[in-house]
Image (cartoon, rainbow, N blue to C red; front, side):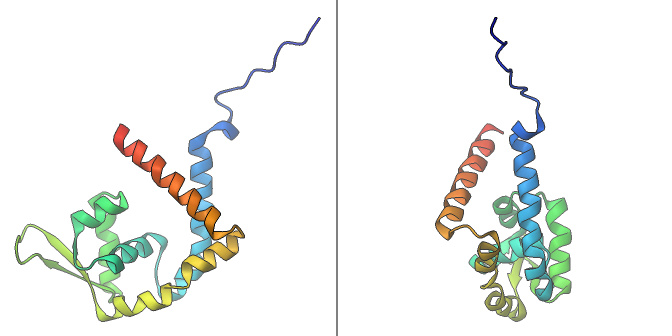
Length: 150
């Protein structure tokens, strides 16, 4: 008599994509904390600053879209960044309904301090940069699939 084949439980925690992504996300973001704290930034604020270092000024709507955030989440981040002196929020001169965010001199200067963050995180992870970039590309592709499915 042969043993019954082992069945795979589709609800096993260690088989869940959502769990692997959530746990990994929390752990990786945790690596950023000690690097960002001296700059007075949280990880979500860092993401906003990254977006603004690429293009400033930008509308709140454009930042929210790029970061996949809703305005209820983004607004408090922007208020704290403004209170820290890194950004300024103003009505758009071309459309007063639009709020645009621009970097201040201090916000632009912070970019130089932040330049070390990506390499420091990569070093703490101990993976080659090429492997991390490939993983990022895979995750970006997955996000695109999810966006298209929504």
